[in-house]
Image (cartoon, rainbow over all chains, first blue to last red; front, side, top):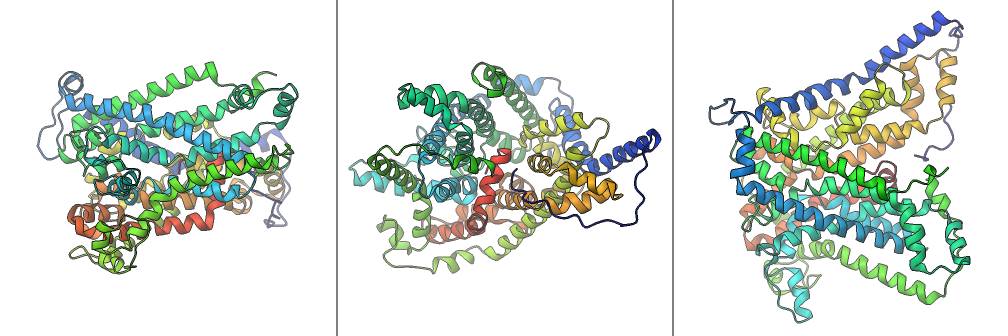
Length: 325
Length: 291
């Protein structure tokens, strides 16, 4: 970050300290001292990595091969039963997969398109850009909250604000959040509404594109569209890729809004049953920790695979300017 | 930021002001659509019960601030004051825990040489992509064993152990921008790694600490799933859980008070947004943080 301005004067430590002597032994001792200090500073992180992340992860892998129930007393090794059950005999699971994939596939491109579109508009605008940027970003700060999910639900209710707007244009609305065909769409809209965060990143990326490129293209008589396709998009591709990865991973993890909109059920008729919501229901309302752990591992593998996939396809279309030299 | 400066000499010729007016108009229309839900929330929180049903406009015909005290005390046995206190306590504890633990970790990664440094750094980046839901079940069982369920401890203690890789990454990026000559000068004056941290890195890392603090606060304030899982007694409920309970118990008649409480719950985030807007935007620029 470039916010550091002039280096602040160092409050001098012990003025009479001996100047460090040169020599290999002295240097080796210093290196050892630094290595030790490194691990001292790293110790909270390492402890957390072990106790909060690694060991629980391995434990959940173990759990996924058991029929552990927190309230029931069973905790037997069942091999791949949970996984087999999930893939062959659990329509809810497949339904949750379908809902989540649909959500991500529709919401992520729409959100990124909105983010890029508004960023392009703002990039051209000279008046009040800071204020606009801030206001567009505001929903990203608020959108994940329960409060906004409650508002959203009320807004797309039968008597909500959205229908009263439609009524002005003479369209009779429906109870969107209670309609299995439309409930998920309202969630998608809520995700798209939060386009501000990727927009800010797009704006920063746009400002890095050298203006000479556009000037040269103008001299050659290129149209605005041509400039967008041949200059803006390729130059912006690393930022697009970054946003795509981030938003895809986030898209798969949406929980709060689905929970609030459906009272924690994933309804109406499972239309908003996001994967994480189904995982929560299995783990924390039915207390089937073994099965929930298996679901968590399938989730982890899928996200991991998806990331690898994104990165390998990314090579084909992401353009890094320093690669050419 | 450097990018802002780079954008300044944009000496493109204005292509007629008509174009600019249209663009500004489009921006303003999108802005109106985006802000509509928030204004509607504010307006509805000030409508009386009858007006909620009859007046679908943005603003109330008759201001009814009574929704706010009504909502505050709408639930039996507990007020929203309790929820605010609980949320504030947890959020502030997380702010301190994240700032402290991530700063120590970032210093090690950014400035010190030690065996396996690159390995641990790669692991740290890897945990950035790790969905928190994967750890929900085993962590719950762990904290259940400790007897920590229905206390705020599971929400705070992990943050003391630098588990928020986002902030470590943000701080490492920031520290890389602090000139190394300052470390060297301090070393010549006899400073070891600890003194360099204390006298050089800590004072200069203030902007990164502030960004971390603001994001920690807002995220924890809005966070739902962990609080839903770990807090089971009404006395320990935070605002998100309290709002959910309100939504469950209140019927159609409680819309005004419910909106009033939703509005209040977002107030701290609004305040932070107004006070630190530039820092927040810079924060996501440097690290790609999600708001």
